[in-house]
Length: 78
Image (tube, rainbow, N blue to C red):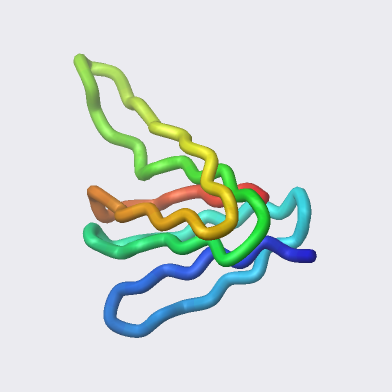
């Protein structure tokens, strides 16, 4: 069964990912990612930390909600 993350800003967008699929999306700060079912590995938009570019990755499981801190390009992997 595909993984279904959803982003809420003004208009909800539903994105279905098949196993092993990768998507790069632009997300606004304050948007929320809701994983309806399955598992998603999410990489935040790259940011500077001590003169290095850093990307924070997290694993989200079915039912998880994550708020996007900064606008930018995020990566979703199922």
